[in-house]
Structures are given as C-alpha cells and as structure tokens.
Image 1 (tube, helix red, strand yellow):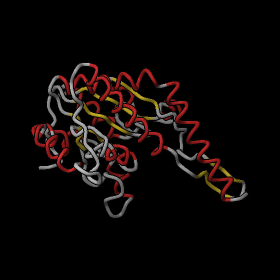
Image 2 (cartoon, helix red, strand yellow):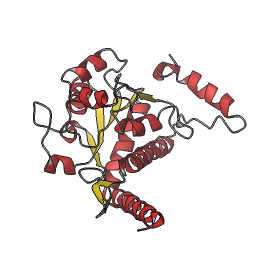
Image 3 (cartoon, rainbow, N blue to C red):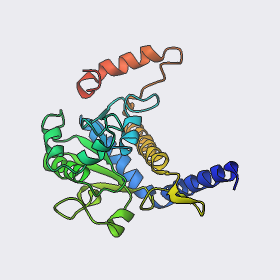
Image 4 (cartoon, rainbow, N blue to C red):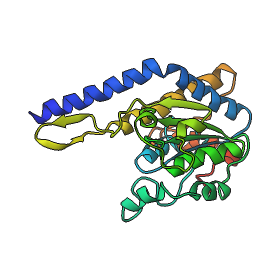
Length: 251
C-alpha cells in the first residue's frame, strides 16, 4: 500500500470523526459555549486542563491568536504534554490519587469559574478527581472525552466513575478505544491517532460559540489578535490590560 493511500485514509478518518462531532454533538457544543459565555458575563474566569497528549488541546486555547484572552491553563507539573523525563512518568502521575486536589488548592480557581477538562479515556484518577473537586469548589465543569471508554474499559478511580460522570456538560469526541484509526496486515499494532485533531477542533468550536453568545448579549468578546499582523501587539496589550484580573498566564 502506498504512503499516499495511507495518508488519505487517515485524513478521511479524521474528517469522518469531525463530521460525527458536528452532527451528533452540536447540542453539547452549544451548551458548553453558552456555559463559558455565562461565566464570562458574570465576571468569572476560564480554565482548561488536560494531561499527556490531551493537554495539547487545552494549551491550544490559551494565549491564542483568534482565541479568548480569558482562557487560562490549569497545569499539573509533569503532565503537560511530554514535558517530564522520562515521559512515562506523566502517565503514572495521571493515576496518583490526591494530585488534582493539591493542584486546585494551590491554584487561583474560585467559585463561579469554569473549567474545561480534556481527557480521552476519562478513566484515570487525575481527570476524575479534577472534575469532582472543581465542582465541590463551585466551578462549572465541561468535559471533552470519549464516552466509548466508559462502556468498554474500567475506571482507574476508586469511585469506579469516569470524567463524564462529574461534568455539567460533556462533549463526546467519538474517538474509538485505543485512539488509532488505521490497521495493516503487515503492521502488528493499530496506528495513526486522531484524538488531538478532534479535541482541538471541539474546543475551538466551543469557544467560537462562546464568542458569538457574548456578542449576542452585547458584550464584546475579549479576543486576541495575531502578533504577526500590523497592530496585533497593541490590540492584545489593551485586551490583556483590561482583563488583567482574570488572566493568570502573565503573572
């Protein structure tokens, strides 16, 4: 099989997943975007969290050209992408009980804020406890996860629950268990994961909804511009200064 054919198959698979999310999760995406708009309008702050490769989608909405300036990364040391050595330590940290509570207790989150949690499987202790503890603190929680894992795997949290069980809104990424879209008889393992493509698109769709919902209420969305276009730095400087009490990636 040619490399070009495999590339096309992967892109077709990714497009198919995006179409499923568009058609089947429209209500959840609208609900998530509206929740964030409600939070912004009420003076709340926005946070995003993900562990391992799920953190990539969370990072993509923070300090992002075309994105909301108010979205902050809630980082757990050692789990942000593959920033820890060895990289396998990050996977182990996702299963540590109590870590989420310690992070939240030392973070700036407060009642009335909103937290977006990205976790493909939603089965590890870290995302489950992050959602549970955040809601106990009075935050609204949006989960972006593959619901299939809850049906086909067992939770690794003592409660036996998944991320989806502790959210105000859940967006199902539709990713199959194992996160690999292609197989070949000559390759012993499935390959070509699509979760980053889909979850990143989901979050951007949610935030697009948020911007529109704010505009519909007569509230100018606090959006950032690209620093590589004329006037971008000046625009961003004004936005960052105006909302400095709700932005934590500058401190």
